[in-house]
Structures are given as C-alpha cells and as structure tokens.
Amino acid sequence: MTYEDALRMTDRETWSKLSEEGKVEVLQAVEDHMAAECGREARTVEGKWLYTGDDGIELGRYQTGNQTIYVNASQLGEGSLYGDNPDKMVEAVLHEGRHAFQHDVAEGRVPYEDAETAQAWAKNLEPGGYVRFDENPRAYWDQPVEADARRFASDRLSQLRSERTAIAERDAAREAAREASGEAPTQGQGAAPSGAPGEGPSHAGSGQGLSGGGESAGDGHDDARGAFDSAGDAPGEQSVVVQRHGRGLRMM
Image (cartoon, rainbow, N blue to C red; front, side, top):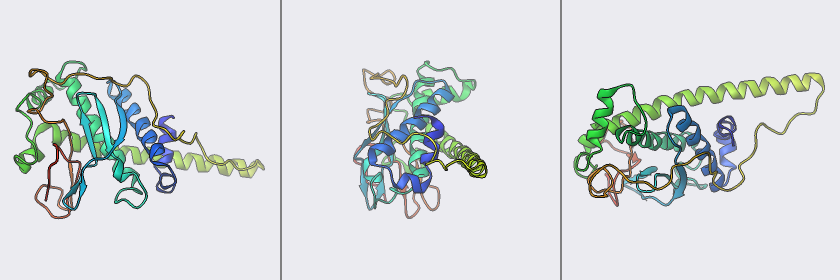
C-alpha cells in the first residue's frame, strides 16, 4: 500500500468500513513513510490489547526489545472510543515512531543535526533516566523525549491532514474531468487493504535497548512510550486519555 492510498483510507467514512487488520495495514503504511522520511528503519506495527479502563486508555506503545510499535486493538473495533477516529490512531503511530527515531539517534544508528538535543535524548533514555508516569506525572510530561514526541506527532499530523485534503481535491478534480469527458466514473482511488497487516519495507527486527546489562532503556520498564491527550493538555487534568507509559499503570 502506498502512502497516498493510506491517506485516502484515513478518511473517517472509509476508515469506518475497514477491518481491524485493514486499519493496522494503513497504519503500517504511514509508519513506513515516516521512517523513510526520517532516514530510519521502519518498525512493524501490530495491534495488541493494551490497557483500556475508566482511568485511561493506552493508545500506543513502542517496544525496544523487538522494535515493534503496538496500537491498542481495543480501539480499532467498531463502537470503541477511537474506533471511528483514524487521526487519533495515526497520531499514536507518529508518536511511537518518533520514539523509535529517538532511540536510533541516541544509539548512534541515525545522524541528527542538533547535537544538543541528541545528547538530551540519550541521557533521558539511559537506564534510570526515563521518568515513568507513576513516579512523577509532571516530570514524565516534561522530559525531553516525551515533549519532543508530542510536538512531532502534532505537527506531522497537521501536515498529513493537509496532504490528505490535497489528495481528495485532486481525486475529485480527476473524477469531474472523467465525467465531463463521458467516461464511466471510477470506484475510488488506490488499492484496498488486503485484510492483513502490511509488512512494509525493511522493518526493524529484534534488537537491544541502550546499555545496561541487556535491559531496555528507561530503568528496566517495558518501553511503552506515550503522551497525554487531555482536556487540559497536561497531567493531572480531568478526562485524560493517554498513550500510557509503563506496565499496568492506573492513571487518574
């Protein structure tokens, strides 16, 4: 699936008709494009049941051990809180993909022009350097890798929306031209998902985190990386929905 096809399928009406496997395939195409854009190796995107409760929803997680981006399978189905919100799931993949990039920069696999930022990421991702939400919500929110991932995902999602609008306008103009010339209307642009998650080019395989006796970066946690999405856009506010960090956390 091409990136343009994926953007067409993140239209709400089209997204709502996709199977859960089809949605993951769309998200994989987005991750493949973002990886190429950033000059890093693409990660595999998989649906997985992550924490979903009254106190929060874990939308996404990046696992360094197997270099996989997980999206919450409970939020891909019909009737779920975000089942009909493709942009929210795309944003989760953008966020987690940014964490993959941060790890690549910190470990020297990918160059980064801002040496000071790269050093801050490396320090943040050292064993004991990452602050979990349950340890200190404010510090979790403000630490370099989380602040950067939120900013990147928000900015890139805005750009993606503009790209999607441009594609829709171009498709509509082409369809109008066909109708004006008397050609039969097309049934839509691009190929539909196959129904199974896309493999994508050159996805990262299993790997190790930063130094620390084989432990993943972040003080031995499971490298779930996330960001708040709350009414107040900060920890401690009401109605928090979160790409949660950590294993089994309960966030109020």
